[in-house]
Amino acid sequence: MAAAALAVNGDFYDRLLAVGGNSACADCASKEPPTWASSNLGVVLCNECVGAHRGLGVHISKPLSLKMDAWSEEAQAFMLSKGNAVVNAELEAHSAAAASKPDADAPLETKVAFVKSKYEKMAFKAGGDGVVVEAARTSDRFSSKGQVHAGIAIVRVLKAHDLLNADDSTGLGLDKSDPYVKIISPTGKSAQTKVIDNDLNPEWNETLQLNVDDLKPLRLEVWDSDTLTADDPLGHGDIVLTGLAPGEPTKKKVELIGHPSQGWVEVEITFAALDA
Image (cartoon, rainbow, N blue to C red; front, side, top):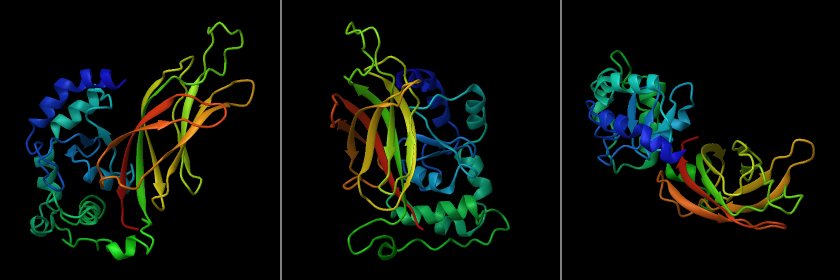
């Protein structure tokens, strides 16, 4: 799906970046080529500010990848009709917006506070109060053990290779596992991909999102979906969150362990620490 999305979005991406204001992030003016957008607000975003948008909830902002997600013609037309310049002219009309807007190197909590004020409170619209919500202090967000108390783990499950075949009852390789991936947080929250039928080298390119309370590893499990019996485990592994650059997507290869198990899963993980 990733290659198909890139092919479909190629011309759209170029046209979108040519729209007024879209050469930089709508919220921090980062000059890095934008790779994300809010599909319902009509703005393009950097890798850090998209984490703040995810924290708003989809009732306010619906982020999509410009490179990995396939965009419908309707969604493309909407994005091309908006753009950062048009949207910011409305949502940053207040004189306080310019002084409050973070630059690309600002701390993530400062960007989160600005995004919440801009899109949730509408603080910088004409007639808004112009007040930025208080940014979460580092001392509030990190315990003495260095744990982050609020954040979002965005896991794009890309593909798997050489998975165990749990369905080869004949020994001829005619039937193969029907795998899916489940991501589980330390508190037991979980999200899972769709099932891909009869494939030991599946490609999901599917984004999962979990609210997490600290930087303990996420558990990745691969299962074989069965209709008539219980699903079969195909292995598991950990996704380590510590050491990730804030807001930066990082690819990891998770080697599957367990009995039985074989193969690996490739994921792209982004951790965005948010204020409580």
